[in-house]
Every structure is written in structure tokens, then in C-alpha cells.
Length: 398
Image (cartoon, rainbow, N blue to C red; front, side):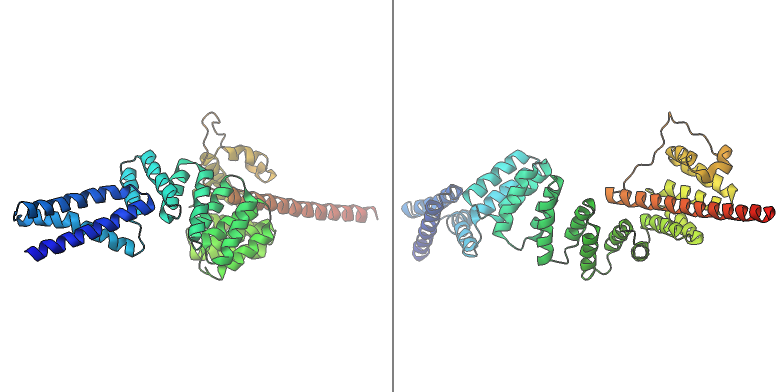
């Protein structure tokens, strides 16, 4: 029993001394609580010796836990290159966040990164909190610190690019994304964001190169094919655009926007049967449903099917009454104008638009091109008709 008490005191004092010097060296008061617990355990040991007591099993467990086990665990943790004080701050932060006390969580993290500037998790969690609060610049500063600590944190590279883009710093965001993709070319989110920025700047050829490169690492990504389809559309390369939309729709059969774009391209190629097929598929997509019915109405007019044209145009107007004004400006609907239902404009009916700016721009470009091609075709017919009349009149004069 005496040997046990001697060994207890040797270990207890040794651990106390180690923890004490850690506190002095790091100037970290988080260790004070541990020292207090150790002091209680050591005091219990002294009382047992001085008063020649024999503690019960439960008291001995408490004494050993306070004076030996807890400090031994902390020393072992730090031997494994884990900062106990950092763990404490992070645990307190987690508790504060669970209690929805964001302000206190930030205070814990700010104290942590001030005391330990190399705290990777401290900077990262603080950046995420700032981002959620809308403090974009502060979030960027923290993510920069994260990257300085861990050069391979590619998610933080992406986050900085994303936030820079939101702040309107497109060129800086693009540069960061290009740098990220050189290090991790398979990072599809970075490809998508860089492609969006390049398209916004109308640098479509560069965007096409970015998407093509990404396909080497993500060959089954319908998003990449769909985005490439939009890029080729804006470049008026409708053949490649069609191929890309078809691949995207094959991978994801619910990609109704792709079907709608394919229908428009087939209209440009004057393939009415294919255009009708894809419009019928795209009517299931909420974002393009009304547009698809409007497109079907035009095809029916081109094919001389006035009855279905009336049905489709009225469905489109019922979904979105703005199609009434659009139909009024289309000469193709003049023969059925009296059958088109006049909507109640006081009760606005408009489908909620979930399309991105890039998607809307692409669809407008396709619709404009389709309209232009249609006008050119009509002009060609008129010229031919006028030529036939002229030849007929000349023949009669002779």
C-alpha cells in the first residue's frame, strides 16, 4: 500500500509539473482548470497519507481520475500533435452552435485563432460562420488563412472563388478557379463556376475548352454536356450543340430544358417532326412547359393543323398570359387569331422561373434564331412567288 501511494504521488506531481509548464509556455489559461482538478486529486492523496485513511473504491477512482488519468490523457493527446486547448475551444464552439448562440461561438473561435494562428479548423469554422452571416470579405480572409495552413484544401480555394464571384470580382474568381483546376482538374464544381463566369463575359470558346477538358475526368456528367450545349448554341454551332444536348438528355432523362433546346434547334434545321417530338417531351418540365406548348402551336400551324394549334396556344396562354401578346405579334397565328382566348390581365398568371441567367440567355438566343430563320424562309417563299408571277406576266405580254 505504501508503494502504491509513493508511485501515485510521483506520477501525480510529474503530470502536474508537465501541465503547469505547458500553461506557462503557451500562456494559455485553459490549462488552469486541469491543474485545479489535479490539485484536488493530489490533495486527496495527501489527506489519505497524513490522516492514515483508507479510501473506499469510489473515492480512489475519483482521486486517480483527477490526478493521474485526466492529465495522462491530455499529455498523450498532445504527444500525438493534437492541441488540447484547441480541442477545448472547438468543443465549446460546437456546444454554442448547437444552442444557436452564434455570437458566443465566434468569440470562442476568435480567441482560438488569436492564440493559435495555425489552427486550421478554427479558421475554417469561423469562415463558414462569416459566410452564413453574409460577411463575405471576412469569410474570404479566413479561407485565405485556411489555405495558407493547408495548401491542399481545394474546397476552400473554391469557396474563395465563389465568394469573389458573388462580390462581382469576376476576373479574380476566374484566376483562382483556373489555378485550382490545374491542381485538381476533376473538380467539377470549379469547372461549372468558371464556365458560368466565362459565359457571362461572353468568352464562349474558352468555356467550351474548359468543359471539354473536364469531360476527360467526368465523362458521364450530364451537367457538363448540357453546359457545353449552351456554349455551342451561343457560338451558333448548332450541330455540336445538338449532340451535347442529346448526350445530356440520354444521361438524365428528366432534363427537360435540354429537350426544349433540342426542339428549337430542330426547328432551325426545319425538321418539324423531330422538333415536335422534343417539344412534347419538354412539356413535362415546369420551367419550359408553357414555352413548349407555344412551340407546338407554331409547328401545328406550319403543318396546317389549326385545331391542335388552337388547343396548344390556349394552354400556353392559360399558364402564362404573356403568351397572348407574343402570339399577337406572330404572323403565323393570324389565321386562328379569333379562336385564341383573351386572358384576364388583371389576374397575372406567370410560371415561376427557376432558370439560370445562362439558361435564359441561351433559350432567348435559340428563339431569336428560330424566328430569324423562319422569316428568311418566308422571304424566300415570297421571292419565289414574286418571280413566278413576274415570269407569268412576262409570258402573257409576249
